[in-house]
Image 1 (cartoon, rainbow, N blue to C red):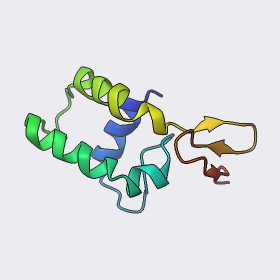
Image 2: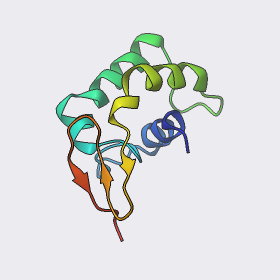
Image 3: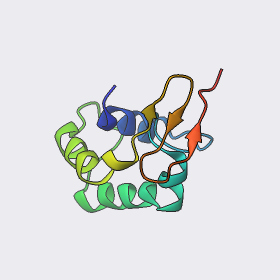
Length: 92
């Protein structure tokens, strides 16, 4: 699944227990406040996150510009963030 699709599903789900969208570093998403920046951008663009026809092109562009650097890299039995170098193990 693409970063944009993961972000869209994260926003639509409204789950507070999820620390970050799937595939993105929870540490960077929270500490660098990417989540807040994303929601502010959604608000400024007037996007309704509850619609069935999302502006995926806009989200894809935002993800490529701002979030590609915190996408977790798969290293076999663990994931590593290229930005902060923190290692995560998949949930079982």
